[in-house]
Amino acid sequence: MRLPSISLPDLPVPGLSRLPFAPSSHPSPEDTNRRVLVTGGASGLGLALATAFLERGDRVIVTDLAPTDERPSTVPSDARYLRLDVRSEDEWKAARAEVEQIWGGLDVLVNNAGIAQGGRIELLTEQDWQLIVDINLLGVARGCRTFVPMLKGQGRGHIVNTASLAGLVHPPTMTSYTAVKAAVVAISESLRWELEPFGVDVSVLCPSFFRTNLASSLNVSDPAASGFASKLIERSERGAQDIAAEVMTALDAKQFLVLPDPEARRSYRGKRFLPAVYARTMTGMGQKFARATGGVVGRE
Image (cartoon, rainbow, N blue to C red; front, side):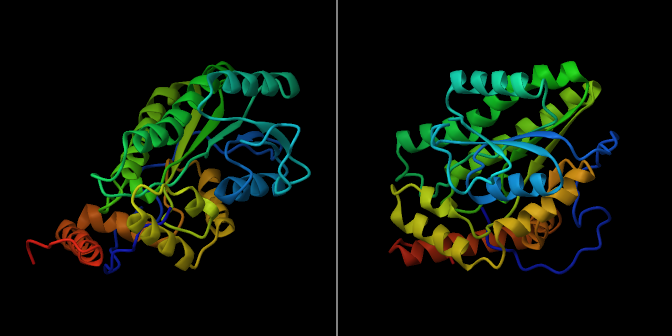
């Protein structure tokens, strides 16, 4: 999900054009016959990533919500397909059993499944919060908990968690979405240090808005905020394939924090190094939305 770009001058900070944290010391595998599982892989970024892995010669299991015997037509013919609702412990166990049976192990786990959500805090319901936490946050936690023992036992592997620029930059009217995406970034960093001694790498993807079907999953508790987010998605110049291409390059380099588009990199640099500009930008966004929705702006 892409956030509005902060207008900032180019900052000549070494290493921040792509990577705020150093890459892993573990070398990238030379073979391309990796075993990959992608959640939420029947559409959007998940499908683009699954396709990119296949094009490199990797073996891929795509998972999504459709029943296993009702394989979505979007899934590439050379990928396996498996139903996996990331909210279900039983279906995660079934996914691990499938991986063990057909491959005997896993090289790359991509926790990508998620929904979008926007809304003013007073309009988000308890159910909105429970749903996005269960899918976007606990879905990642369940995936990691399911496959980490396998990866540690192998002494190698790569966990890739899809977060968002919203996990690093926190604009108004997106409290639930920014909260869970920030938590995915935090989980990923903790796991990075936890799993490094076992030869397992971790990456977290933080793209800004790009063209995808994610807008279709936006909640309707706050139509104004959801409509604003939908317009930003639709106006983006980049599609999921563009983001996936950048991500694959970053994964080859074993980057931890992957900012796969210029808007994400500029916004993240701005928050870190120009906090006053960042604060003015976010304040302006809040006031603009308040005016657009008939709110009273108390301070100019």
